[in-house]
Image (cartoon, rainbow, N blue to C red; front, side, top):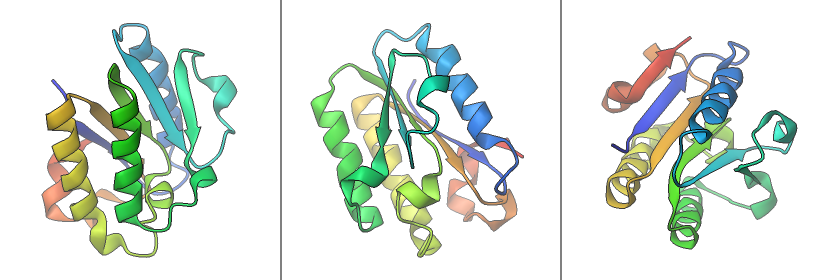
Length: 143
């Protein structure tokens, strides 16, 4: 049962810890592979070694369309992919400068999730009330 799940709240509310704990707990029961996308390798040692950490900043992604293409590329390379964790989402997806594209990117991720049966668990530094209506159904934790 794949889906897109959002952990939302302003910076400094503890979203990353929730995401790391969830990834580490879930990988124990995962049949397929688990990938963690982040804006640095800072959390590498906090993650179970079965989880592949990708530092998105190394790949020169310039906008949110390229980011979605990057996600599709990861999906195409890993047929066992079960879950993707995305930390610092607005930064890694290049949405910080154009938050009006959040809905479009989320719709793309939802489509990828449905097509390839991959769950996306995302930390997003925004207050729930500041998010577009059409993504609010994806919120699982609001801090």
